[in-house]
Length: 101
Image 1: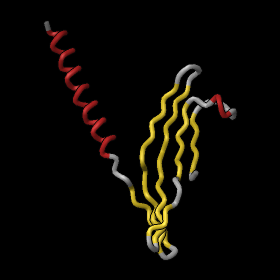
Image 2 (image 1 turned 90 degrees about the horizontal axis):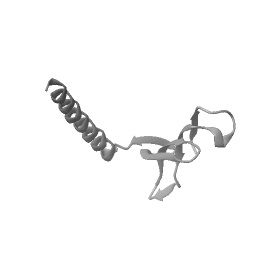
Image 3 (image 1 turned 180 degrees about the vertical axis):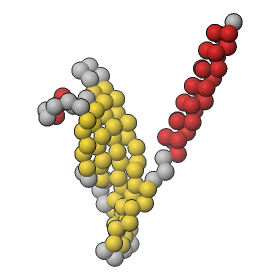
């Protein structure tokens, strides 16, 4: 685990409402390089339900003693945001037309 940032709740682990965690996967040796994936998990917890959103963040590439961080572009996340924006525009357009009548 690289970093753990917690928002909300007190110091008890189970009482935190929102957590944003960054994790490192298992390193993989490829030739003279060591590749390590990184991901983030946003967790929202309540008493009876919760929500977890995982996303890739970057790949760490270690070669000859130097570490390079290669960011991962999450196309699926961008598509979800664009489609949500389009739905929101249609909803607002329909609401405005309904109020005009």
